[in-house]
Image 1 (tube, rainbow, N blue to C red):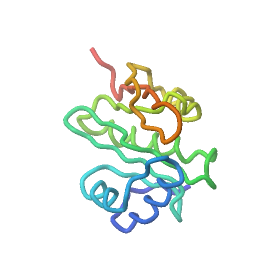
Image 2: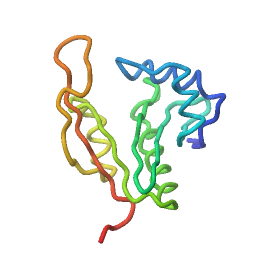
Image 3: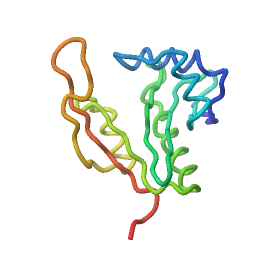
Image 4: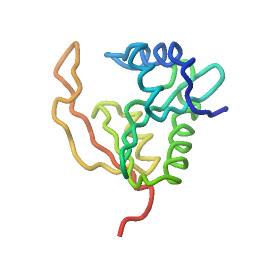
Length: 147
């Protein structure tokens, strides 16, 4: 499994993968802007999955993580998270945050295995086309020991 930083030429692949993973996917222009300003890691050639992180000061937030449906359960998401945590640990970032839909049990299990801890809930955060909006579970991962 190859891992590398995202590049501007990855826009179409990231958009396609995001479209298969989320009810309200982002556009190509969204991904072009993220690739220009944020941290993106991709897995596989051709791209099987990606992780997008925004770092500000000593905190970073996972904005999205997606793996193409044909490549799920093959370790891409864990490898992407491991690479990001290793890279961020070399910076001033001390804590990594994310939110995930409370009914996304595979993602919640992945983040738990990766050492993320629950820190809160955002009620009705995720808009759903069918049924009620879904809560977001807020999670945090310490990149270095806090005193």
